[in-house]
Length: 79
Image (cartoon, rainbow, N blue to C red; front, side, top):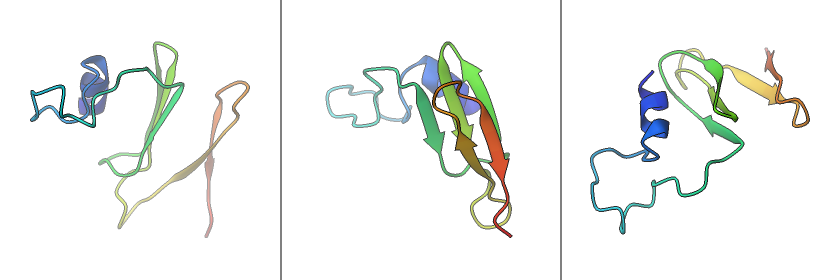
């Protein structure tokens, strides 16, 4: 996915090439990265980082609960 490519480059804003002024540059890799939005809700593990996206905010948002000890994700339904 595009998000995975951005994480590999450690830059969540590929338009800005000046790294000194880029606040979206990932300096330290997080254990969990949760992003609201994206076309499809998904959870993946990449090199020790759990990546969670919620899907389209207006039409098909999905919420997850994460077990912080095992990093297992559970899809929740609030309706």
